[in-house]
Image (cartoon, rainbow, N blue to C red; front, top):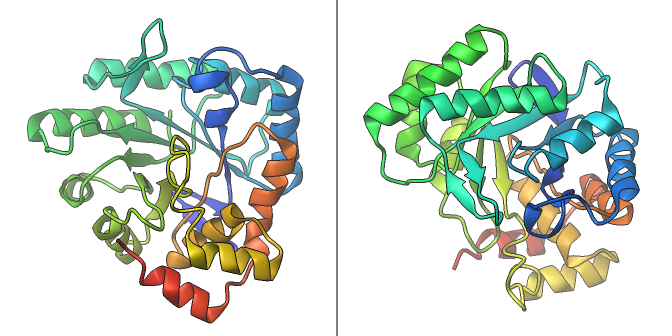
Length: 285
């Protein structure tokens, strides 16, 4: 399956995440402005029609680059953003969970992207403990925005199964973004429920943490072996495995390099050896 529904959109299962377009620490302008624009335009040239962004990437920088590179937007392009956080003057990531904050962030996304409607907006949760009163008010804000036509669909991010079940009792959810990779499958129950309900699941950190000197995901023996056999990179093998986990998994690998973008997109054509896939499937330490 090459595509999957994201609400009212049908998107390719390999999209693009704009998080790496701003400067170091996802803060400030890009190192190379023209290269950032080239990456976005090449993404469209490769058939990518799902771009994930956020007003807090920069802040504003990622959205402004997307607008400069791609506006006016093609009808099939699903622009997805998120709300629930903010940045301070030093770039620290802080929660901003009050419903009024969510509405202001949503409007900031629309303004910086110069669009009247987004394909989806993810409500990013910072606390794994469910505050039912707050969560209900947050959902009401998202539902109102959808009913007003500002967003086509509601998404959730960094959530538990309890969050998802509560939300589904109130409204349709079109996507969920949670951390998930070869060695961290703590969100498997969330993925399973999404699969059951035909909800797009968009894993972040699919390659593991980029902050570790020896990334155990990319240095996994089976990953390295398969990469050597197929003449691919370990990152491509891991992304291909992630795609194969479930039909509703959508990837949004990010990069500021055209070459890396093309490598990431090429994972759509990788078929893993059955033995390797079984070994990776069973590796959940």
